Length: 322
Ligand code: NDP
Image 1: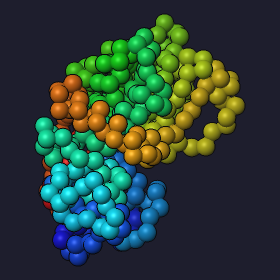
Image 2: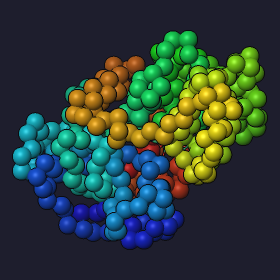
Image 3: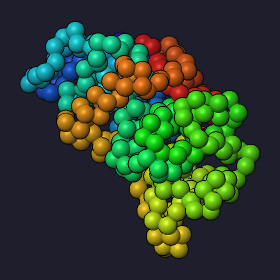
């Protein structure tokens, strides 16, 4: 089968299209014939070595497809089932293994491309809005990079809850997308100071929560945007890793909270995964959560997909089609 592997860490040039054997499922695993692979920023962190991994590594964590073989002890799935997962062992490939515990059946109303487009970023938006800082009507949130994959979904969820949603984006085109997702206010953080704008838009009070996936370039400013005892949810590092900081800052800036969550810890049990997945896939199926799949690439062009997402050119979701 074809797969995209890295043998060393580095830039897009280390990604190779290789021919490797189709893997055999071990105990508790399922073999998936992949229909669509989700492109996520985390692949860049693995490729660059920011997240360590054994090499050679087939990139990719998110895919939808059809179950073609079951390992020993797997129950609840059968060959032919349409499934999706955000914990695939090497999703940049034609086939991949997935722990059955991390697999979810795709509702009949959704096609497999929609399922891959919704899953990892949708689950992320779900736990951020409902668990990390459970938003309430009347809260005010600042969401950075609101036209991105997670950003567009999180903006929709926050708006639907009744939260006042302030957002940042880099271009007027992205501003229009954030607006259509339900943003109440849009700050072009490439042109104006998002801290001053946030303070102005909240009459100096600050927001209850900042969802910050940008990291290095926004972190310090995000702390400045919070009301006393507000929470900074740092969930990504699209602009680079946040440098170490002195916790006394949290005291001087208003007894603030900072958390650095990751999806795996919010889908730790089967029931938590199933319940979040049912919400996200159900809302896409009934039209209450809108997906934006900006571009699909052939598997062989995976390196280009990561170049595009890293260069701030993209909005919404990118998919690879094996
Ligand atoms: P996005 O589609 O949001 O793409 C990243 C966006 O970040 C860009 O479009 C850009 O928006 C913004 N950005 C700002 N500065 C930079 C920069 N210097 N370089 C690149 N991008 C920049 O990606 P995803 O939706 O896939 O992921 C968003 C973030 O969320 C990532 O950091 C990812 O790692 C993280 N994430 C975390 C999860 C978790 O559980 N913790 C799970 C899933 C994703 P603009 O042009 O508007 O500035």
